[in-house]
Amino acid sequence: MPLPLIPILIIGLAGGAAWKVSTNKKGIMTNDRRKIYQAAMSSNPPLPADQYLTLAAAYDNEGLPTYGDALRKRAALLNLSPEVKATRKAAIQKILGSADSTVARVAANICENDGAYGSAKTLRDYADALDQAALQAMVAPPPPPPAPVDTSHNDTISSTSAPLSTPISGTVSGGVGLATQASSPESSTPSTPQDSAGLGGTAAPDGTATPATPVGAPVPAAVS
Image (cartoon, rainbow, N blue to C red; front, side, top):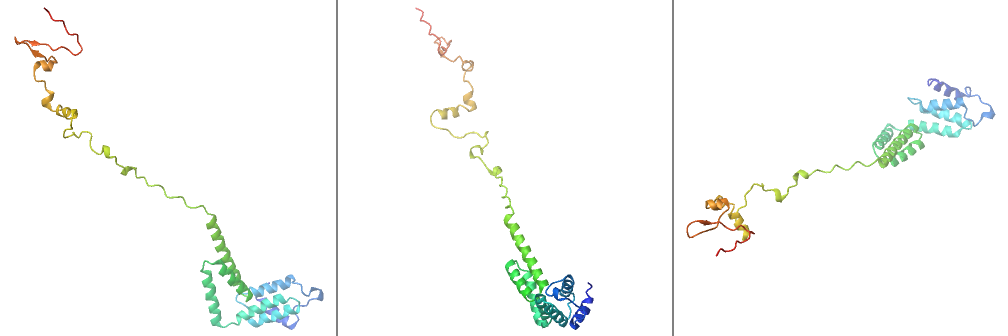
């Protein structure tokens, strides 16, 4: 039913000419009555407050007082002062910017009791969205742990910090010191040709060299 027809129907209802019903339909929300009620409640801009009151009385007479009460609440909202309307609007906007779904549901109940059914639905939808987001955050898997930092390139081994070619300086007591001393060029050169050939021995009285007896060789018997 087109919305412009609503005021005409309401005027007819007030005169008792537009809504002729039989007694067996009293208290029944017929399709025609429902269409008129929904069109009046969803009218944008709203109907004048006095027309809501007229329509409410008609629903009361037909045994539908619940719908009559809702229409009277709509008329009461329209009759609020501009200051009260501004305060209510600011409060609703503030709640719609909060993260508390419980507060939004309480405000929705208040709006519904006052006949502000559109605001009540908006607040309930907002509360449902907040609850859904909180549930998804609870069941979402936790983020993966950060990757370990590789510090192997910073490790140093003190035993290999010095180059292997670095000469060992100084002498150590005992035989180690002799080995260090023999590593010099002077000690590595044989003093005589015989020493160089590995034939070092004792000199005979006639000046000839007596070969040294190799280690482990049998000692020859003396010649008489």
